Length: 246
Image (cartoon, rainbow, N blue to C red; front, side, top):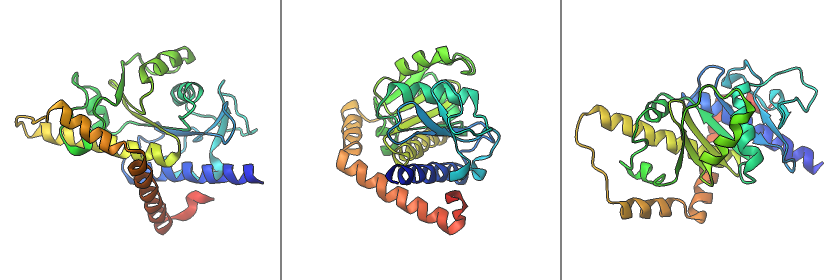
């Protein structure tokens, strides 16, 4: 019974993340995706059914697949092949990557096309100072042999900018991956807004940026922030439409 309860809780959280993706304006129609590793099952994870909008995802229509991309729940639904490549790579290689979130936001795609990448222009941006991986664009990641390169580029970091493509975060929970994506995307939005002013960009000294990054990554602060924000966002979803739980 405990395993069933754990799976249902995971499905609820993952469905919530899809709905929040839509509410935050991060949706790219049917082409953005979030995955979560099944409880106590390293080789199986959940993804959205290919063709569903994020606003249509609910706990019951998530699809369970294995690391070969085969359905593991006897569902006739399919999953996004490019999404499978990216997500399976990190689930297989990183024991702490229980959730993987990938977006094509306007700000994220804009910064992904800048040679300098993400700049520490604001307190929010400084949280990611020297903590963002970069992956050079290789084309649409349809082939599983690209997984090794994705893993190598990610290393032990929890956030990545896929150049000329978009953003990616991982977390020990769905809540943690969402938290990182929210602030990574916010950092990109800040950068795009600043650059549009045409003014001279002010970047603090490296030691200041590193200090802020260490403050933000303090385990106690991080855990509390992730939990409080996630519970608040679930309350918001429940007020709007609790159907994601079904």
